Length: 373
Image 1: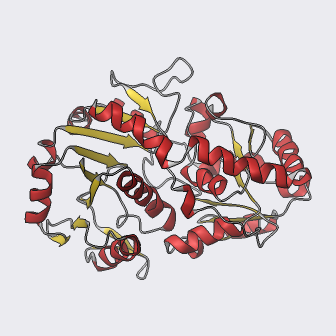
Image 2: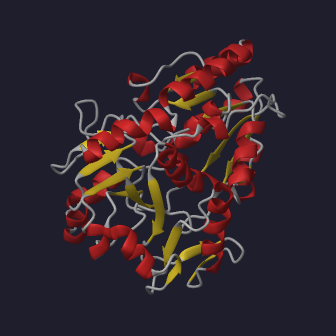
């Protein structure tokens, strides 16, 4: 098939966001499909060199090319700037590709326009990586927003419980199908032991989008702030939050930007870690959404165990060895002790879980079957 894939690599030019789109592109190509990356959000991009939103897309377009070119995709992308100029593939090239494309995939709002060339593609799907927030925004009933989602044939979400009795998030009459972030596990697997005896994560402290929903990680993290004092485990978290407060409480924080400036910085940070300790957004936890982190999948694929907060995900994924869940502080302490006690067992299990549940060869075929069946 010919597939147009819309993502947000330039809008959020950070390693974790980039890997999300890249692993879809590589996974689809490995299955024999021809892919074209498009980014057409109508928004200006963030430029880390200026630490500002910029009308000049130069940083974003260079970043897209640097990310895709090593994988033979350097000529397989087009970025549409907020004022309508095309970069990378031309508008004519994009329209020609769309003219006989089979599937349009929108990940996380990679485009917010139903241009004629997108709308004419016979199969169209949206993949929601931010469950709860997306559904609550639709429930507000803003006509253009509701109509936009109605333009898709199928809607997928990383919230495995969305639309079920386990989760009370409104769906506004729309059907949401559960899916997971696909991981190209070969790109994460390593035989090199972790270089640092640290439980780590990469996190955003407080939501910038959906500011009207009090659902960020800051609210959940408050319950675990004193965890380092309760355990011998050592931490290092990459975060754009209150560094001084976290330093005082023993979290050894570093600037999230420092480990996310490129694909490789992000991957190195995860591979160098002993394991992940991850807190979820409050909205995911309170709603029992079943959300599971794409970042945690990458830790597992690298053979790094993960101890992550429960959102309802354990009803759908193996929990207990390699991947451990917690709800309160006592469970977190117990989980850390279990990982420390049998680390090699958990590390081996982590990689097995990634291959079985998150590898792109497992995740993408059922999505494509439903999308185009």
